[in-house]
Amino acid sequence: MTFEETYLNDNILDALYDMRFEEMTPIQEKCIPQILDGKDLIGIAQTGTGKTAAYLLPILSLLDDGGFPRDAINCIVMAPTRELAQQIDQAMQGFGYYLEGVSSVAVYGGNDGTRFDQEMRSLKMGADVIIATPGRLLSHIRMGHVDLSRLSFFVLDEADRMLDMGFSDDILQIAKLLPNNHQTIMFSATMPDKIQQLARSLLTNYVEVKIAVSKPAEKIQQSAYVCYEPQKLGIIRSLFKAGELKRLIIFSGKKDKVKDITWELQRMHINCASMHSDLSQQERDDVMYRFKSGQVDVLVATDIVARGIDIDDILMVINYDVPRDAEDYVHRIGRTARAQRDGMAITFVSDNDMYYFSNIERFLEKDITKNPLPDGLGEVPEYKTFAPRKSTRGRGGRGRTGYHHRKYKRNDNRNGHHKKKK
Image (tube, rainbow, N blue to C red; front, side, top):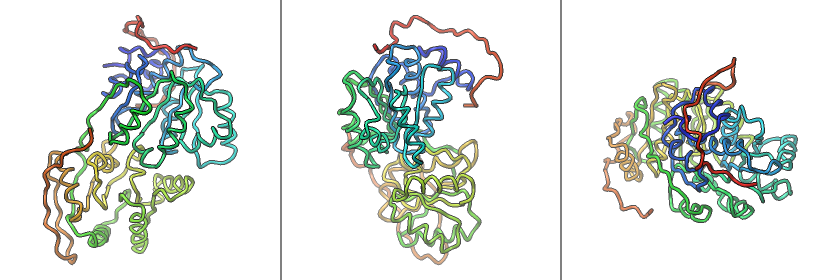
């Protein structure tokens, strides 16, 4: 289905035309009409499926059509991290290129007082779209800079990450300030019980759209080492001795283990840095900048960077421990083999992780190659598979270089087109 077959307005379609966006992704095809029709919605889709456009495009189209107060905040998009807020803001600039009457501001922590003052002025003037991290938005709310009484759209992006990062109370606190007739839209990569509970508390008669998690790219060469926990560092040392490894991410589910791995790599004189929740926003920004620019060869991280961060030249991902969820495994190894490149993904499977790894193999519908342990590291545990347990849970740059003339072949009878009243 093409974008021109929807009720998106011509200004949005012009921007998409310039950006060479024509065919919708499955999540966009299922979500855009529902949002245009005013439905509350929860979308379950992994990163890279086009979910940002799935909610931004219909909301921007509706705002541009008019009927909303010009001096009010009409939409809030909540994001768990500054990095994701920045990416949404960049998408907003592209999609909204021809929207003269729709304003936006990104609100997130980790910057100086000048930026905070700019945010304050935009919030008081009533920017149409606010893209914000929960903590920063609450700071502005407590200082009286924000009036949400006339809000029309409340969007939670990567809701599962926000709950994992402890923002549940912040989200509920913000939600209490919203008018009764607003439209709520949630997106999450997974649907655990806590997300279902949040959806029930925030959404009314909502539509659920679920896009199956894609299998990892075929270009990713996946393998594993079956080992005991103390042998993992020995495998790391062997991998680095075998060749100069760069553009590598090592994932661990625990921040303390991330710190230990980083310390061991530094003892080996490996140019590395760590990324975890104990770092300040400024420290995280600095680490990410140095890694992206090539000043750091190896990034050791918790799942804080497994989703939502676009780095195209990662050559290898190492799972120091096995993710507890198959979808998390896909997100982690999906950092490599991007932009048509090849990539490698290696997972260390301890005797305590075999159940979770067999779940991953079952999800992938394949047996992942088990590598022999490097010499001198001793015996390895026997790899066992487990029967599944029963679940308890229910494009290009923007802008024109010249005049483009085209005709839209679409139905302009918009009887079903949702419009909020002023």
